[in-house]
Length: 176
Image 1 (cartoon, helix red, strand yellow):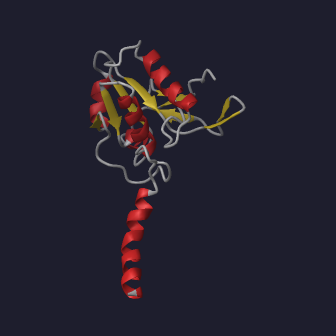
Image 2 (cartoon, one colour):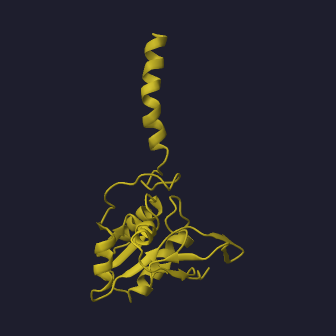
Image 3 (tube, one colour):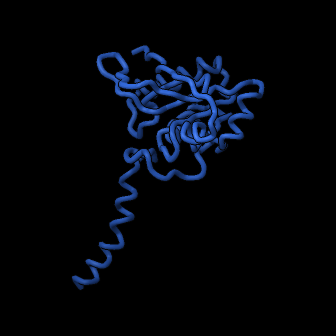
């Protein structure tokens, strides 16, 4: 009987470990740089070529970079310049799995401002490749009512590996 219980525990541990990476709401809460699914809820997954085409289209999509940045005493603490797709807006910390209402509001209010309150305006969410931060933020925007979402799954890593130009960007200051 002990052997059977031990065997069941050995097979159950990977399942238990994998579910602990997610909040009860379904957001990834740790190990953000790990393999991601092929799709994000409510969004079309795009590659670098599709993003290039979208950036040439009208209306031009709003590109939101959600890579984290340390925030203390009302300031983002940057130790080195952050590069992103030219024209992107940096809304750091909005892809964390557990998000305070202040950061949730920061994401949604800025997305509304950048789209001039048009939740059907195209929005691309990105960070790095194999990064759950952009998946989480995409899901949040979908649940907030944004209907024309794109998830740039491979993020800035793919953009840079394609030898495309980058731009140093700074975080959009929060109003809290």
